Structures are given as C-alpha cells and as structure tokens.
Length: 255
Image 1 (cartoon, rainbow, N blue to C red):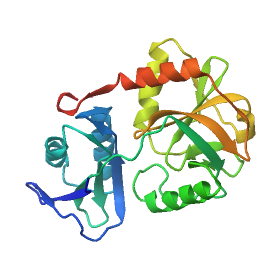
Image 2: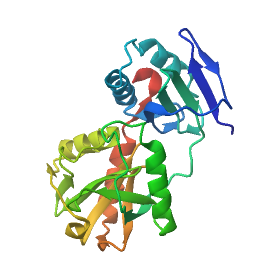
Image 3: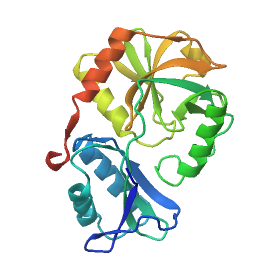
Image 4: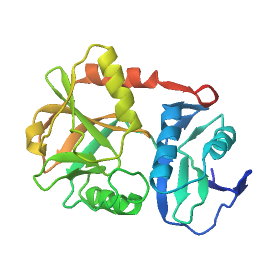
C-alpha cells in the first residue's frame, strides 16, 4: 500500500503525496485498525493543545473533522497528523508496520530532545537515537537524565512492576503526555492495581517486569535490556494487560 499525504487548504484535504518533507511543530500518530483507534479523541485533543502551545491561533476542529472522515475504515494503518513549521496542517495515511508483542531495550548515551513535552519537533533526532539502539541489537533506546534515571523511550514509554504495584517515571521527568500510558493507568486503577510515580535507574529495575507502551504496538513486554538490568517476565499479567488495552479500541466515528 502506498503512503498518502494530504494538506488542509482551509476547506478540504488535498492530496500532496510526494511533496518535499517539512520540519514539524507538532505530530500525533495512532494505530487505526478496521476503523477503530484506542483513545482517538485524546489523540485529537493532544494535537489541538500542542498546536496551540506552538502558536497556531486558528482552530483545528474542522481539519480534525476532515481527518476523521478521510481515515480508512478497513485495513490496518498508522496515520499521523502534523502541524508543520510553515503552519500547514497535514494528514499522512501510512500502512502500519509489523506489530510486535515484545521489545528489546538499550540505554541511550544522550538525550537529544529540544522540546521534550511536545511530540513532533524531536522526531528526527529520536529516530536517529533509535537507530543507534538498533545497531546494538535493540528495538528502542531508553533516555535517562543526568543522574541516570529513566525518563522515556525514543518511541515508547516505560511502566514496570514493583511486586503488585505499577510504577511510571514521575511527572518531573519531562516527556510527551502519552495517551497509551493514560489509558493503561486508568485500566490498572479500575482493576484495583496500585499505581505510583517513582524515579528509577535501569539497575533499579533489575528483576522487574517492564512494559513498553505506545500507540502503535500498545503494550509490549520487555524481554531484554542490552548491557542493562535482567528483566522478569509475567506471561499472565502481560496477557491481561494486552487484553485490557485491546478493549479500548472504538470506532473513530463514535469517539
């Protein structure tokens, strides 16, 4: 399947597939499967909020309505909505890559982010960081702060378990406000699981269950951390987490 790219002209989305790439101010992407997305309204809200933060003064509601209508209702896709540095609003309709349930991590040697709370501007730098991790035989890089504490992944967020308590990095670990983390956190709380925020270095996570969360793959179990901590696996809990997350997919027309 071809990648399609549309640009909003103020009244409709126009096909500009093949046009030159433009640096981003904001981007948001999600897994679209048979016309369903997990947390679709949250993705649109995050995009609108980020666009306002980046200085866009005109509303994006009509653009987002057009996006909802244009997105395919069959097949599996990984669309992205963009605000470019020229102020243009765009939609990419991209076939989804292979979806995976497991992931191997490696610790990044640097933090290249310049806008850590926004998704979009740092995508090229984070892509390069991920490529360095892949050169080590990993799937994703884990960004740590100056004290060596876990902040985020280059394309994923991390959640781990300390006994029966789920843990995520604290709010002061500045990162993109993940829709997937929000959904999983709410599901865990609804099921009676304690959830807390806590700093941790990779070594603090030795023999812990670690999960990588993002909008493409949902919940993945970390099976290895290259030159990092040994990880524990809990197939029963992993299956339950994935099943709970799958329940969040809903028709985009009803989101």
